[in-house]
Structures are given as C-alpha cells and as structure tokens.
Length: 321
Image (cartoon, rainbow, N blue to C red; front, top):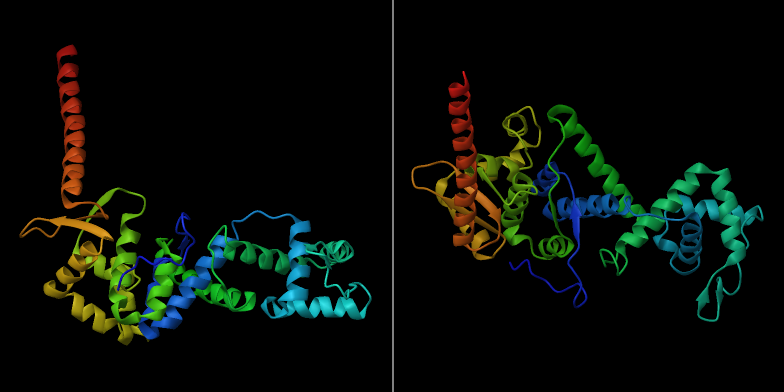
C-alpha cells in the first residue's frame, strides 16, 4: 500500500491528527472500527484546540440547522426546536440568507441569549463549530458523517486512553496524515505497516533519531508503551489478548520483523540502521541511510567531545589542588 495519497488540494500541506498509541490495540479486534476510532479521536482532539467567538458559533449553528440539520448533535437540534416552540428562535422562510449572504442576525441574537441561559447547549454548539472548523478546507479538509458520530467515537477513545493511563501513566501521542487513515480503512491488507509505522513514531517523538530494539517496536505495534503494559495486555488478565497474540507471535520472529522494517524503509516512511549481532536499532523518520549514519556519527562525536572536555576539566581541577 502507498501511503502517499492526493486527497488534499494542490499546494496544500498534508494535515495530521494526533492520538494515544494505546488506540492501536483497537485495530486488532476490528481494523476499520479501530481506525475510525483513531480518526474520531484525532478530529475532536484537533478541533478542541481551535479558537472561536460566540458569534461565529451561533452563526454556524444557524447555518447547520437550516442547511445540514442531520450533521448537528441531536441535543442541539432538539434544544433549538424547543426554543422555536417557546418563540425563542424564529425560523425564517429565507433560511437566514439574503441573496448569497448568510447572516441571520435575529437568530444569532436569539442563540446568544440561549447560550447565556443554557451552559450545556453553549458547550455543545462550541464543539460543533470547532469540529466544523477542523474539517474545513483550511484545516483537515475532510467530510464527516455527523458531529454526534465523531464525538461519540472521541469519548469512547478518551475512556480507553484514561483506563490505559490510569495503570501505566501518560501515553505516547504519535500523529499521522488523515489520508493515511483513510487509505487503510479502504484497503486494510497491509495494516501491520500502519501499526509498525505509528509504533515507531511513538518511540521517535520529535527527535531526529532514537536507539531502540525489536521487542520495543513490537510492544508499540500492539499499543503498549512499556514492558509492564505489554505483559499485562498480552496476558490472560486482559480478556482481549487473543486478538494481539497472533501479531506478537509473528513479529517476535526475526525474519518477519526484519521484513516489516525493510518494507517501511523501502516505502520511505522510516529509516533504520543496525549492526550484526547487536540488538540496538537506530530509527528515524525517512532519510537516506547514509544521512542517518552521518547523523548518528555526528551525535556520538559531539557527546564524545563533551566527555573529553569534562575529563580535561577534571585534570585542570587536580592541578589547582
């Protein structure tokens, strides 16, 4: 599978969503459902960071209510309907449009009053607006089914994250292109490439490269950030361990893990270097192997000169004494 897709508009950067690494576990029971859970978490997590004004929130809520009512949260729809019944929201024949311009001034004022009276309604409308903005052309540039669908998925994923972090502490938060998630939803046959890629990204973080090993990569592939988490989720104590164990058995074998890493490098998603008979693997985002080798050498040389300066400084100190 080729991760490079062209869903985004020309000359537009690919957009990324971020999510806890533990959600990879959900792809083992049901690949599509797990990937959609990751996507919903990523969309809402991204959306919650976006700024808003209450006037913009009210205006978009009116637009959705008139033109794409099914997208709105059911709670928001029912609250506006009740406001209509009580003459607190005045639905117009023009649907808020004046020619090509949409600015239902009276409706906006009515919703702003409702925001003051109902904090839950206000919060729901704000989140609707943020998700709308997150999915717009200037951000993630995707179309979603409904706000309810994504909020439900986000809350489900948030609960899973909370359960994981309660036992094992803050999880790693890798990211990936939105288009990559859609690629694997449409064609899941190479799902292990996605799992390994995300697992490696969760190890790498923001660093240029990292030294690791194959058991750590495998652990991250199944959504476990630590040895303790890996032992727990692949043991009988975890009632869904049966979904993880075939992958653990397969990639515990050197041949399959080596082939997986090589395929990721060939498709230009990561680079790795290792020495024969040494368990340490150097991992990086994709770069030419020579570039990674030089980067490792430069880093070691830099650390070495620091050590030499420290040693020389201690010699100076002994002279002073």
